[in-house]
Image (tube, rainbow, N blue to C red; front, side, top):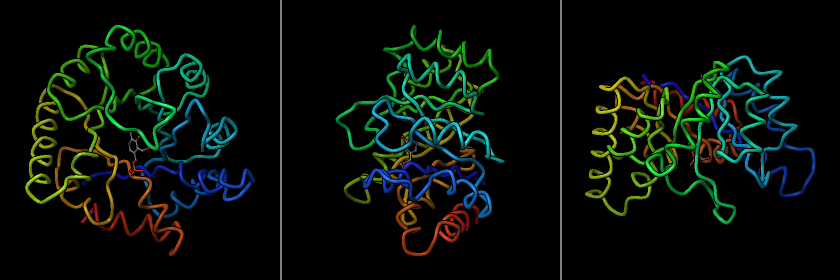
Length: 238
Ligand code: PXP
């Protein structure tokens, strides 16, 4: 059964729409915990478009479950993460002009830079997770740079145009999961998963945790956060 990491960034997106104090993503952490989430994900972007430095600092102080800090490998953000010491960092590519994280991290290309950064995180006891496309070359590179875990990008699966494309993308995720697991990596998955497409991915037993944000916060607008998180847990754990 997959665990659920709830990405609370979009609580902060609503706050930032008015540059005010509500809704507070720090309060969202508490409700996710009550609902049974296994971890909280938040992405401290370089442009601070949603989550900001105050949020991650307070979340770290009050959280009772695992904190998974999603982040780029920009030196400023790496320094903040090393001071914050979350339970896990999830390293992602980041472009200012993107609406959300578009592709996986190119670990093959950035292997030298990543080796050093990963070593610094591991020295602090922080679990390192690399967000990658479901490709064998990226998994091999993730092993080479010493990552503990990978998160398979499910965006292509989620956005597949028709059923045959869904099956193709699903197969890529299954193959990548098997390969990574066989080579000793912890496997997570996420991005673009919704109440409507999550069950197939949740059925891959080797995937330890699903990280899901937008769909949960969207449902929470209508039914409340606690109920929205519980609804997702019911889907992925049954
Ligand atoms: N995992 C990673 C690495 C992400 O970048 C995101 C988006 O912030 C998610 C999971 C969650 O994606 P979504 O909001 O589409 O559920």
